[in-house]
Length: 408
Image 1 (tube, rainbow, N blue to C red):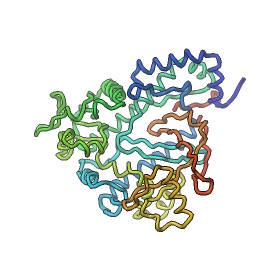
Image 2: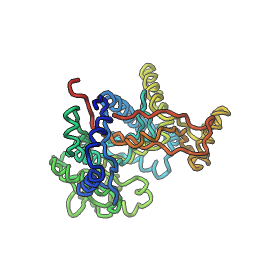
Image 3: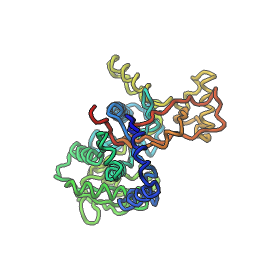
């Protein structure tokens, strides 16, 4: 059978494989390569996520727009108390966001979680804080590239693997230089709790960064020491912190994160992402993204707003419900009920999004594209009515390796 559909072509090639043996091989290889989340391997599927060149360009454009808006929000909110309040930051998060990190980029490395639809991308989240994924994605791409079935697949298609680790390293070093750092190369520490399930990715990143010429260690916030001579770990001075420890943890465990926070406040170390990234990380960012465009020229403002509306999920802040019509209020109540009452108390602003149902069949093909993760759709809720429930949209049946038919 011949086909121009890369997914169907891959499935045809799998027919010649022994499925159980291939599955066991992929699972064992993931464990050997530290591609695991805690004790669980990352990928239970027999096919990588394919992306066409057109979809790659589309995702890149929209993800860059989202990042740009996130940076605008972080800059604008510090000068506009009402916007800072609408983003639903806690008092502790506001206090941390007001600390000057020494450079302007709030989110050095982010991840946009989206559904690929035929005519748009629908973003469920912008993880602007400490996203996992780059080393996992690259490791899985390399694993699939070495399979015999991929070699046969490449006889019919041009395949390019995504290698996001290099881009993440370049972005981190660029933030270090923007901060004013002069060490060449800087000594980097990947900082998070040693018991987190993503620790294996830190080890992969450490090995890759060190091999690229940037000496890197992985350390727990409790292993850091701060003094007038700088931030140290294991007796060595740290120039750049790749912060994977969450701001929520820094707020909840201040004593254990004291050295990191003191060095950050004193600008004794460059920290990426900064503690200002939380403003774009909040779900309310989607509901308030248009507010930061007020000072832009009208043509640019209108064009950007149209692009944002096309690709974001419908979202409103909880305190806006009084301005909605009866039917919209009914939909919002239904969404809050399906979200388990998360939006029940509307005295504090919070984002309430209408869930969109997708076909579950396409959820099997979820994967990662660079910094953009195609996440699984929300489960169906049996109590959702047709009238007030979420609108249904078909997910694009994706075609992370980029593929192109040979000869085209």
